[in-house]
Length: 113
Image 1 (cartoon, rainbow, N blue to C red):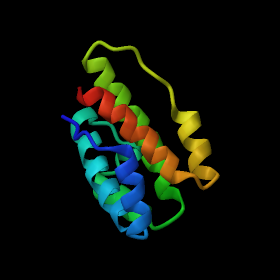
Image 2: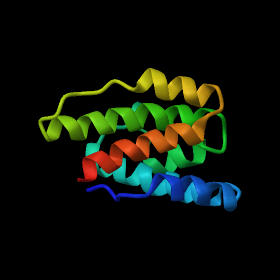
Image 3: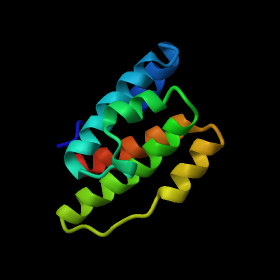
Image 4: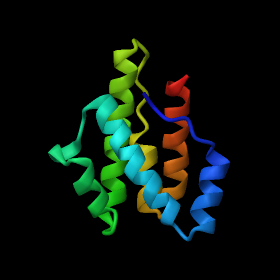
């Protein structure tokens, strides 16, 4: 369901490629989360969410959708919900989007097992 990715490699590639790998990661992750959880804030498809990344609100939409979709997958598997929306939003608003991405990838890695 989810692709398991190494978080240190993800961060390193994002920095070395000046953010190009981060955009690829966003696209892949948005698509995987949407397919797995089927939830989207404001009925925004992953394509629209990706375009919004080039504006300040894209990271906020990603954070909210990621949390909703991760919780939907947890519910499908009978696991308890985890509310990380506030953490993700605060990190995105403060400009620590890479940390938010690493946290989301960590949760995806846990659910991939």
